Amino acid sequence: MQIFISTGEVSGDLQGSLLVAALRKQAIAAGLELEIVALGGDKMAAAGAILLGNTSEIGSFGLLESLPFVLPTLQVQRRAIAYLKQNPPDLVVLIDYMGPNLGIGNYLRRQMPQVPIVYYIAPQVWVSSITLGNTERIIHVCDKLLAIFPEEARYFQDKGAKVTWVGHPLVDRIEQFPSREAARRQLGIADDAIAVALLPASRHQELKYLLPVMFQAAQIMQAKLPQVHFWIPLSLEIYRERIEKQIQRYGLQATVISGQQQEVLAAADLAITKCGTVNLELALLKVPQVVVYRLSPFTYWVARHILKITFPFASPVNLMVMKGIVPEFIQEQASPENIIEAAMEFLLNQERKQQIQADYQQMQRSIGELGVCDRAAKEILQML
Image 1 (cartoon, helix red, strand yellow):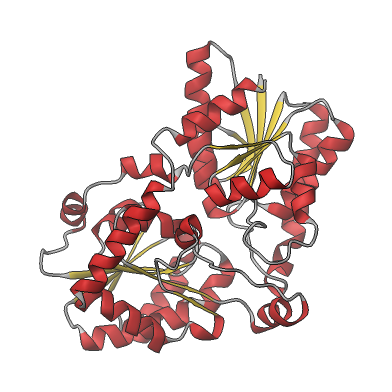
Image 2: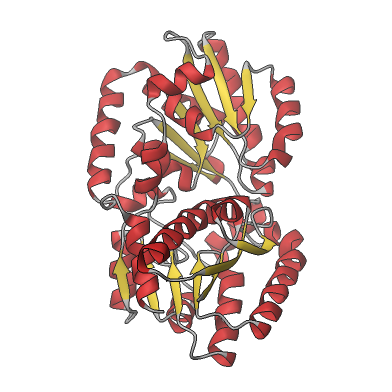
């Protein structure tokens, strides 16, 4: 049996790798001979998928931000479709990555209507005030939707989709993380040192829009707390040179590290982070965090004033319970002053620290039980 999985960006590669591992384990238990081919990244390949194209470095978010990646995305999409023409799969799994995945899904619907399609981790159209018809397109291309957020499941069910809520896959991944004590030992962090994780980018554009404001905030924090040390785990090795140059420019006491993101997150006293999957990892590790995000001014202006897009929250931590658990600073609100005020409160105000721990516990009750990836794999294999 052959399954084709399509995803993009760093987070999609991570989620895809967890699913590939679970599918292979379930297939062995069921006596199935299973081949998985994919659009993804190195993590999926390491988990046992045969890559048709590496999409972990060609992700973007926004109008102008997407332009440099249009051609590479079309090329990898065409390569995948050419392969599927010659080797029709028994089942297809789409993970997030809305534009390319809807293109592939629509092709399969037209040319191979007999092939079942599962959408796992659907694009977050359920969050926004305007979906531009994408909700209907997502429902049209899939036979089943596996939801990871409770609100996502309710939204798509109300729209007529066949939905199963499986929980969020990071529940399973967190089991692999070291304890805080073990992580600090591995990284050589002293008991009295303040370790702050800086997580500026998994996309190229985020280096441009997020890294400067994060480093400005870090510079102010370092002046206030000389014992602080910043840890920057790389999502992609290609970002190292640019980040290290900026560390020198801002005079930060910082370590850029590759391949040890789990240790950095587990060891941190605080994180200043981009909006994304990592927010949930930090919440499950009980690490206080300040979330920031910026787009190009043009993209943001069009979204707010032309398309009239609004959203209740940006961080998946807050979306999980539809409550402002972690502070979010978006666009012009993402200033060094706002970041520092929220960050210092977490570091110095014990009451604020206790409050976020209680809120994290509430969120954890909504995220699902262990075994998320196994449940998703079983749902998928049952459709074969």
